[in-house]
Image (tube, rainbow, N blue to C red; front, side):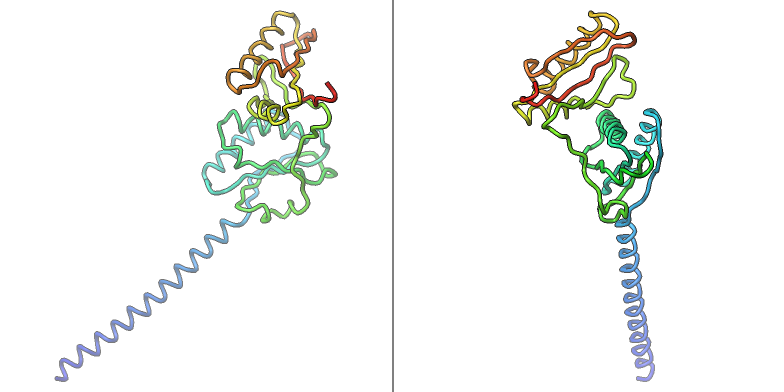
Length: 237
């Protein structure tokens, strides 16, 4: 009888030990999960740059996209600083690079920071915009559709593209009374004409934008053939 009681008491102690170990394991697991979630919610500064040339910025964006691919639940924030002209140029380069790399544009947000600071920008990876300290007072770049502006540029060699044709076509279709304008430059009329015809066909065939919605201005200029793509409100046409 005492022999049986010994084993019963031993089993009780073992059961109690198992329960304590399970409680401890549950606490440890909860702590790990909580810590991981906290780490994921924090913003990570992936890159920071000052005044850079197009090729340098493109290389940085390529690395940034690779970082986001490795973190599929995160969103990328490109925060740009200083004068509006430079910010617009950088934003166009980033948009074009994202487009031509086939990356989901919804995962890249381009924001304007303090325009009084030095020229440059920062590339952040985060799950929430509020996690980035510098984004307390920012504005999302928006086009002024009441005045003509150059949406982007493209040359015959495809060097440093700043033009996303699909988004340009979407913008013009979104504003049905507006017009597009291709301002093409080149040494001879035939190269300019071929360049424009190529783009008109692409707009119509790939994006459903009628060539009747686009005016063409051809200008002679030494050097490679290139074009500026304008957005023109109806009242200023």
